[in-house]
Amino acid sequence: MSVPVRKILVLCIDRDNDVGSRLGIPTPVIGRDNLLNVAVQYILRYPDDSDANAMFGAIQLYDNLASSLGKDNVEVALVTGAESEDTMADLKLLGEVDIVLSKFNADAIIVVSDGPADEAVVPLLQSRRPVISVRRIVVRQSRGFEEFAVLAKYYLTKLFVEPKYRKYALGLPGLILLLYGIASIVASNLPSIVAALIGSVFALIIGIGALLFAFNIHEKILSFIRRYELTFFTIVVSAMLLILYPLVNIYVLGVPLRSIILTRPTIFDVLSIAIAIALFTNIVEIYAKRGIIPIRKVVTSIAVSLFPALVINGMIWFILKLITFPEFVGIVIGYIIINIIAIGIALRFLRRYHDRGISYAQY
Image 1 (cartoon, rainbow, N blue to C red):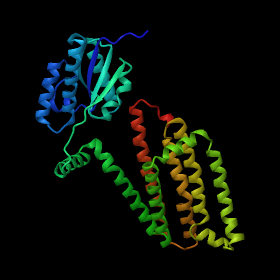
Image 2 (spheres, one colour):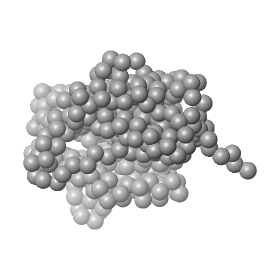
Image 3 (spheres, one colour):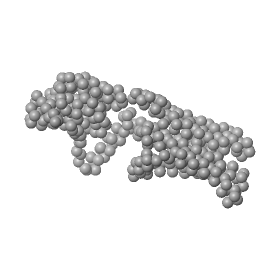
Image 4 (cartoon, rainbow, N blue to C red):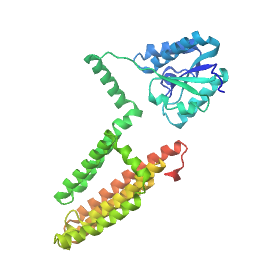
């Protein structure tokens, strides 16, 4: 027979610690009067911040529960994490929850927040007390064009000014433009058809990826991959592609062997495609079945996949004097730069996983 809930803690969550850092106050804040004082201070300084509404929402919920359950059976508190919103922030937040529970031994918790970022800690709170409800405080706005323009300007400014959002708003487009620029520089040292080929492949990858996520097709693909062993099948298909390409060109289409080696797409381009299909299918399969991204394997796959199409092709063209030595060096430098960027991104992810207490070996 279940034990009835007798004492309720209304817990306002501020995972990124905007309230504590901006007001310079110690947390946790326990009690209605203390929280009301903090909420008033905060909204007077930052009237457009939703954290203030979350605090007032927690106080309102506390008042409603106190009137029905009694003040001795209800308490309200504010707990905060850290600006980084990582493992250390969650540990700090849990420590503050323990302090609150040591002073008010609640049977259950009701979480009040202003968005999904704060609600991400709900599974952690379940390790302390049952979370019986989550209330999100949503600020209602009028729908006039002027109000929309003000809100759009506010959130765009927030997106490009605050570091935790800026790395996504500027970092990802910057990376795409950087890779496109490198690809264009490499293509400028190759035959003219290659520039169009690189641009087309680049656009195809981004377009297909966007469509998969936009229509949630990627979830169906991952579900299919979880049920079947695709790596071996993909290796067989890739090997057949590599074998059939020269045979069909020579014996069916009558293309000379020299053209297969020197004319795009060359046999080494097909080799790169076959390797990339096999390796990246294996990466997707690992992610789908184990829930991790094998970052080291991603870096290795990029290096191995690009080597035949760039370096081997360039070497053959240089030996046959189809390109000059500076052009060949430019191809090699482009290949090295791409790999350095891939390694740099991989190291950043590995450090992030390490900060969360995840072993490098898993990735």
